[in-house]
Image 1 (cartoon, helix red, strand yellow):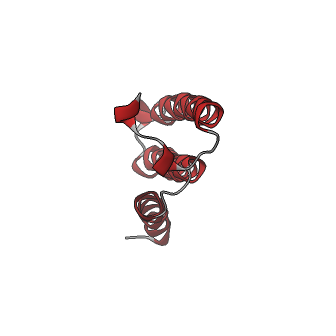
Image 2: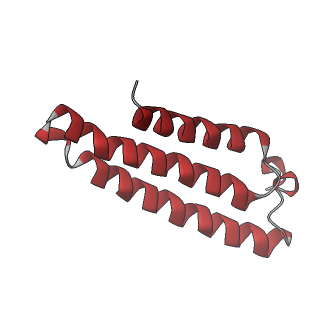
Length: 98
């Protein structure tokens, strides 16, 4: 395993651990999700270059599109929850009370 692969795997793992253990604010959960998407995007961008596979060159663009849609939906949920609940603390959000 090269140093580049190790850095992608460790960035993805650390983002997942941050998402699992630091869930106090919605914005921190969204930042962890975005860093996971960024590490996946970088890994998918490097992968076709390493394997000389030209058929997978559009995969990072598709991944970036889904990442932008996820970020927009996450920020919309952040604004909506802040307006209705007054803060972005995740312990204030309860799906059973909706």
